[in-house]
Image (cartoon, rainbow, N blue to C red):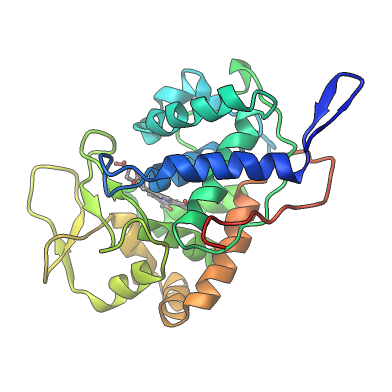
Length: 285
Ligand code: DDH
């Protein structure tokens, strides 16, 4: 466990594994959504990181600026207070960890605990102040098309294959009318990471949902699943579709590419001092 040198606590891998274990224990809750906080914790890690701009080198998970308004009030972040509040108890117990390391570590724990791949992770993020909040509009808008998706993710430094791999996170969780305005889950197992998102995109018939809410798709056969306009763009666009087809056929390939892209997402813009990455033990190991 952590060494005290000159009064400064230097956490070791074991200390971070303890944080992982405490996060894992918090995730399951039968009263919340589909029985797990995992999806909303993944979304917190993604929205904390996905503000990165490679040209100005601003945004990204370093800083954890979503703690502050105006970033906490950006429309895209609606509902993420649930995840931030959940993790506050962990921060109180493990004072030494930064919020920015905690949120990204928690996203890794959530992916692994929901049956996803191991995501190598390393510490080193520092918390910033309100002056580092990013402007609104850096995260994707679900009502838009492939041109918008590319503009947003190319700004972070991702390519088409990585965009499609990251999008597979929509196997998890659901849309909430009181958060984004959209409604429903993408898959029948929203607390398990699988390549079902890609399979359903290709195999189901999708039509516009008839309702008063924002434009979204529903599956014709059960009307219980949904796709956003940006999800459908991944099969309308030829270049994106190629990768949807690859991941629909091969869950191992999806897991490998997802782990690489998600791990990189969580590190965008972070000035790490150490190379070494940790691979955490999952509860089921
Ligand atoms: Fe997402 N996402 N996302 N998403 N996302 C929503 C929920 C979740 C877009 C829009 C929405 C990624 C990419 C995109 C997760 C992970 C990831 C919701 C619903 C909207 C809207 C929010 C709500 O009402 O609660 C758009 C647009 C894109 C895009 O790429 C164009 C990526 C890359 C990830 C990722 O993690 C790598 C997860 C998990 C959820 C479920 C949250 C929950 O509470 O459940």
